[in-house]
View 1 (spheres, one colour):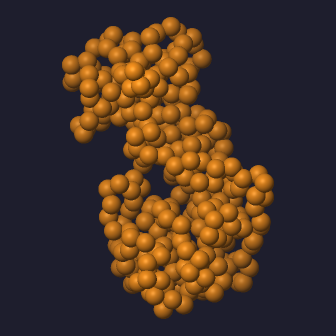
View 2 (cartoon, rainbow, N blue to C red; view 1 turned 120 degrees about the horizontal axis):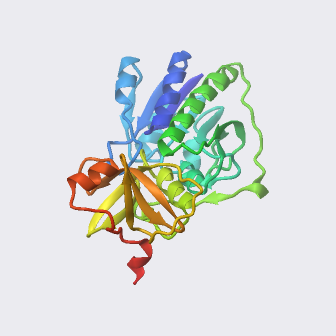
View 3 (cartoon, rainbow, N blue to C red; view 1 turned 90 degrees about the horizontal axis):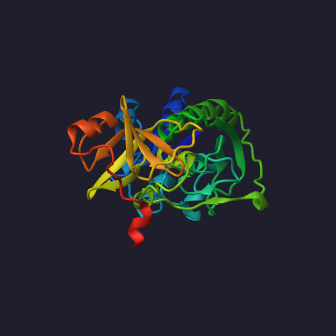
Amino acid sequence: MRIAFVSHNELGLACLEELIQLDADVRYVFTKPSDPNISDQVEFESLCRSHSVPITETESANDDSAVATMRKCDPDLLFVIGWSELVSSTVLNIPSVTALGMHPAPLPRGRGRAPLAWSLIKGLDETALSFFHLVEEADAGDLVGQQSLPIDIGDNAGSMYQKMIDAGRAMIREYYPKFEQGFVPRIPQEDEEATWWPRRRPEYGIIDWNSAPRDVYNWIRGQTRPYPGAFSYINGQKVTIWDANPPNENTTFVRPSEISYQNDDALGVGVWEGTIEITELQIENDEPVTGREFLEDYEFKIGDSFKNAREFGE
């Protein structure tokens, strides 16, 4: 089957690698120009050149040049994976069989933006990767299949992202041979069960230290790499919090946002009736450091406090 492929992220690259391994007829790849504002962007040119697959950069899969090139490819299948725009009906009508996408949520639940981050922030214990037919409405097309993604207490955005990539590879290996045989599953979504995640922006990541320990922990792990990170301020300097230990169930009474202790490489910070142990943080654009290094290398001490999110409204 002739394939056109549109992506700029790691999940897309993994799926393209699997298609190439399966000897799929990938006619053309479209990707975005390098953009530092895309947190999980990767380059596709090396893979494409090594397998003699034509590739071009485009800001939009809907622009006239991209559409004209797609039409010349005469694809049976169009894959649009990890692409930060909805494709138009003009593009969706180009492939002779169907256009396909992937979304890391158990569709119809979790349509919308940043589903992996939201799943962690909300403390869910499971999500999924959905493989589905693209339609004009976001994440609303019939399903090809789903693979569940368990969320363990030690998981964060990085580990869940890897689970998503592994699931994407597995589904390409499972379903593409069926596509070649003329079997393309279509399982309608139950629209009445649909829920939506809203868009997240980097500035939304500020930490509310008055929240419960598990809520602060979920906030941190849901926004760590490859995303921009949860953050706070201390003495006017922005501090990105990259990692923390899962909280215990002990109740402690420390003023929220106060640095209350240092234990090996962990920095204990007060939250609502507890503490959260921060293990990796970064001041402004410096290199990330441990909790121990934060105190040893900078002029901070036990008893200092981060600025609480609620203080910004005062």
